[in-house]
Image (cartoon, rainbow, N blue to C red):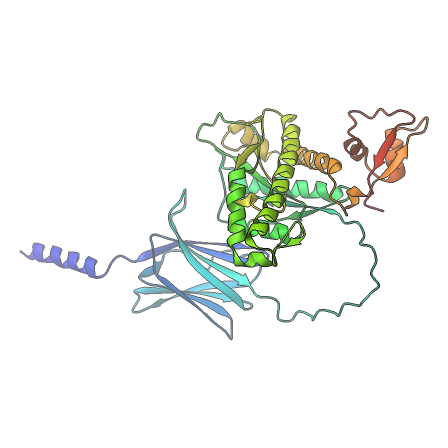
Length: 436
């Protein structure tokens, strides 16, 4: 009888006091505009969040939780977060976590359910406030208007995934987020050296950026092209080869409808035309025309990049693919997504880890980009401001390139030359050099 009563008491106690949720680990990432803190928890947990000042800190209360990890050994990213500490509340039944920060920050929190190798997670994003001590902007001096100087092309280079989102993983443990960032950085350095081009790295380090924010950053920098770099994966490790994608027409149409439905669309410029004073029908037509041109440009540059990748070896898709990737849904920026290889294929995983192969992949992407803009330079850019040179007897392509401070490769690309052989009397187009 005593055993039965004990069992009933234990059962009643477990129902009245459910087992606490354990905080099993903490991970942090620092981005230029925010810091992300991820608490790995053993299950769903109710939480509340508030801020305190003097000193600045963010407080998170977790109901029915306990701490099963050491916070003192946690390596914190440079930036706003100084320390994470903890305490017990309500006679030890609840857990309080405190994020000590060195300036004001706007916190946001949300729970994520299990996915892949991750279990339940409580995510805290600390959006960095503008520096309070920043010097006031200097007044802009008025000057007499002059014709705008030709500008550089802006190439937005997006390394996929990042931070707590590692992307695909190879058998040797290679993470997609790591190799695509390495390729993106190499491509950015190459673009930096290109006459008339300027790169913008969307992700500069190991942190996560939301898909919609990636395109917003590209638009903020007035990008002429958006290139998202990834590595593919498949359950069959024999799958191999690169692929290049653009947004599907169905995805483009649905995105256009969403753009028109959003109230802030009134202030957006599509192809330089404001939609503020246009009725819905005219706005829809203007947006459709803009997006049709964007899709055609995306297909053109994607085809050129794919042809360059074919020179490195086997490709997975012989033609440009079309899919509804969210990261490609900017209606006014030609956008492509490059799957560089299958990280799930052991041989291709080895190549993706090889700096020399990363360089070849970046070079192939650059060659495709260069070829497209050599044939389609946007008005007002340095590439559109070309000179013409009539070849004299005895002149060589390298001699002409040296004279105009451009590369032989640029001359070949701009003039669609298959070799360095030129003939007297031939007219060459000469791009404006970066030193002009």
